[in-house]
Length: 434
Ligand code: NAD
Image (cartoon, rainbow, N blue to C red; front, side, top):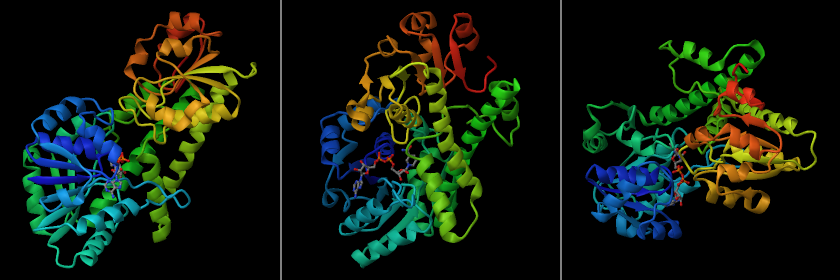
């Protein structure tokens, strides 16, 4: 099948490369010329486990190519996948549809022959109708169907998730469009459920799923807080809860709050849609507030550790919103760092992959280090904010020697608390017996 993926970011690039690996001819299209030039020159623009190899293989054999030209890519395509960003409106927090609308209008000019337009971006309910209207208005003779094809990949596992989806949701009103999708996903037909629903249901499934997951994270975070006051251990509690198949064992790990490009903006967008439709979505609104409070509390706990020192220095490990990605968008780590900076704290940061993205946001407000130990050297406390596996390998005895005072805020429960205490550390971890 000939496919154009519009938007070559954290979703579009792994999707395009994955579809090429399945044998399709894919053009990844983006308006960001710099990004496309980098991809054309053989450089992967994001960090994702397993992406580099698939990228090199499928660019070498010509199955995936890159372009900034709608005129070059759209007419040949049987399927056009929209994977552009839908960032929050800074004031209302509703999903901003400007990129979707611009892409829909531009692609409409170049449609030729029957084409399925699949919206993979996370979009408010009824966006399918809006995109259909834009295309029909722009090119009244075009032969097309618009479907909803929401994306459920996890950053850090994008390639794994592409080839091993839990489910594929297709919101389509036309049998002709469903046939195209059946052909596309033929390799997955025995691997997972492919659920065909209405466009509106499909659009809602994505938001309802993300809001539920955000709520689950915040729930276990609150339980971790409770454990700290009750003598219980959050891992024992989570294990006991997770054995109930109605609850499930996943996403029951405490942390410094949820972040990333999806949960914060999607919970806000869902809350906005609730207000707009006159529906009480107070569970989601409470989740958003609880997550905001959590990051402030997390920063406060670190500040308390160094309250006896003027202009203290904190070594921070991790700025990505979670391990396995270089994505810093809405990262709790960055939000905690920003609160600390406002309290005249010096930050020495190390992240295995996210340093360039962090520099683009924080510039020269902090010190960037080449290794975890370099960041820790001379700091008054250590804060672990991202769950990179390599941080688990750090040597507590060496850390103790490098810090001016043995204190750790371990918000990813990286270290063995018992061992840390035996070595004389003051350690603040989440929901564990100390
Ligand atoms: P991103 O910002 O990484 O990528 C979006 C890309 O779209 C950018 O490269 C941008 O230049 C490009 N773009 C914008 N307007 C364009 C246009 N008119 N024509 C061509 N390209 C255009 O965003 P992302 O993280 O890949 O997310 C994309 C969508 O997928 C969002 O709606 C997001 O909510 C959703 N989503 C993201 C994830 C995730 O983990 N990141 C998971 C599921 C769903």
